[in-house]
Length: 141
Figure 1 (tube, rainbow, N blue to C red):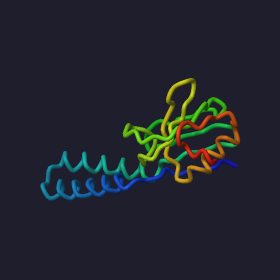
Figure 2: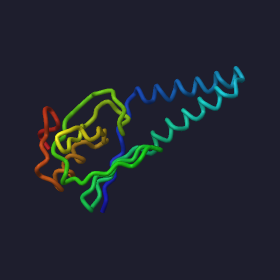
Figure 3: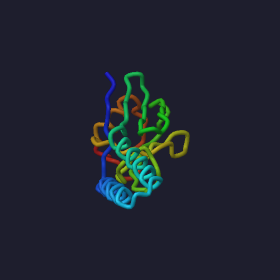
Figure 4: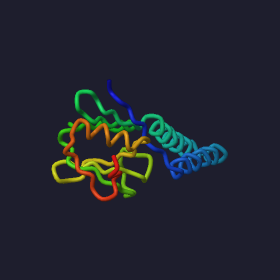
């Protein structure tokens, strides 16, 4: 049976949503139609990302990443070489800065932030025991 891991959500993301709500209210008060449309669209995208960012470890041996309207990403777990902790603030399929970098073919493939990190790593390693844990990535798993 496939296992789904929701993304962790940091306080900065909740702050972003709060700011977007305030901006929506301000644009409605000011009556600028284009500003209203833009802030509502950005807010809708942010809420959709909150509700639809998750990772699936499939029984078929694939890791599948979902993040809102962005393209679904897939990788064979057998192709994952290493996992590494990161707090890089670059765009990724993660709603937290507490991330795991997935390495494949000698380069960074993607960053994720599963809520139950230890189970996520343990499950990936059950499919591919050769996955290395770089630096401080839950070496106790």
